[in-house]
Amino acid sequence: MSDTQKKDKETKVTEPAPKPAPKQEAAPAVKKSGSRLGLIEILIFLLIAGVIFIFVFGMKQMQIEKAQEAALLAKFEQVFPHFEDIAAKAKVLKQQDDFGDWPPNLEFIDDPKNFNTAEFEFEWLDNGQVKMTTTKEFGREGIVVFYDVESDSYSIEDPDPTAKPAIKYTWLE
Image 1 (cartoon, rainbow, N blue to C red):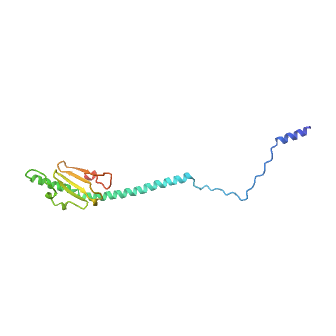
Image 2 (cartoon, one colour):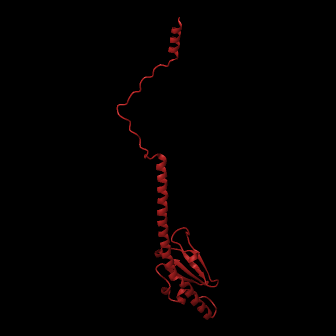
Image 3 (cartoon, rainbow, N blue to C red):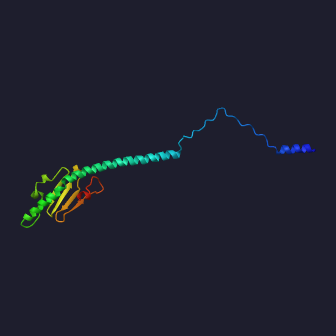
């Protein structure tokens, strides 16, 4: 073999095979737009919308509850002086009594119609306490407020203190 033949053989071995020409597509490729929303962006949007929803409607509900509580407080403030009125009249009757006893009931002190309202009913207990009970018109029946004349203190007996409407101790101050 001649030198030229050897060189031809070597060049054939080392030369890579020609690559086939790339196929051209019949239609041009459509570029994807960058404004497409991904899963993360959608979740962030939903999270923000949920927070706004909770905040806005939570605030509305809180405003409604505050308005209802203010209306109940206004009703309670109208009858709150009745505790002192009943107590003052009962003290006078106790001083006038020969034995120093408290009056037996509210009828001995004054006409109950002067104190009772659609929302609240007053009673006098013979142990020196004024008892006020809420009615259905108040929103919940059975909340009892006691005023002890001797110790000048109030107490509330609520069968379900978590239920609304309720009478708060701050109203009694």
